Length: 428
Image (cartoon, rainbow, N blue to C red; front, side):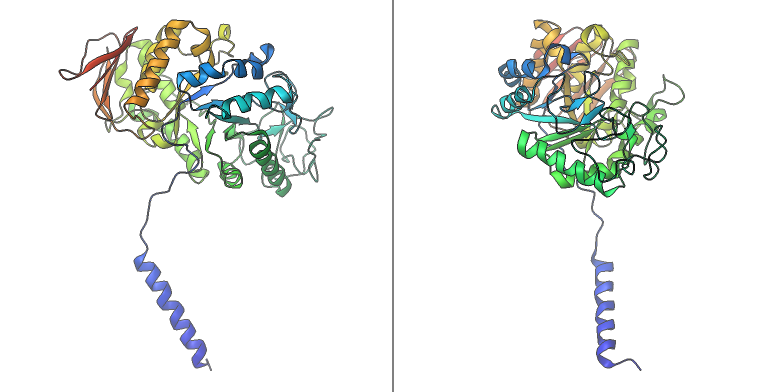
């Protein structure tokens, strides 16, 4: 027979459960590690920067970076690696790399921190290469190097679990389910933050493992900012638009969700549609069926990092790999768009430092106007027109932008503040 004391305890638990059931409300997922909302990123390198001494270049341009208004600088991978750029790392704790010496790296990081600019480290943890062999990992080694490699890796001797993402043939795919892989990554990243001075992370090739682990690593290191490189495949029609590209930005949303809303993602959908809109005079592409911006910024702007080009996509004459370059004659329009719109914009180093004073001045002015009008990653956008010759929008009810050859202006009470090749910006 049940004792009276036990019966009372059960009844109390039932009361608590029913109370929680009927009093709990569903709240939106709160984003984390997404910066202040007012940030502007500079990618501090291109694919061939290492040939010229990346760390010294960043240090020597520290004042110019600060004067431009950048609040974060994305550094390339900092560890010793196979190959110059750093995306095949072997010794995580060895900071003498092809980009420069450890002392030069620390000087560059300090130069940013001393000016209130947050240095962001490129974190390559999907894969790793050995020192002299396929998987003779050292500095650090894992408790079991074979177990640290997924069992379906090309090496053929990995004894870990199956990969939680896509494979990467150039390096050994790390098994993020293995406790020691997780532990070593957390130790190393905390060392980069606490000892070297980094303030945030750019995660490389995150499609190679579950975004769940990015959430774990961010919780373990508490970065100011985190962004993942999830480059979704374009399936079907490359010239798709409107709702037919929703699958693409949904992949970005799914990855952010997988992290537990603990990392932003690069907005490849905006790049895709902005490239087509400007190159083909199809500016209607920039508005979705709900009247919002077409990219990830139309669905979750706080967690979206917009960009024109990077070390992978940019043209080869500027040190890029030319995988998906923005049309050079339309780059001004591209920056007029991303630097006036929500999301966190990222400027490519060659565009600012290597394309001449005219483009540099225009980018600098756009950053200044963004800050002046308080445009943030979540600022509201009111699209005024999006047709075959132009796109125009009012952001924050205080800044108007037009890109494209078509005529448009916001009317009386607005002052033209900046303009260039088929773009203009007004404020009121």
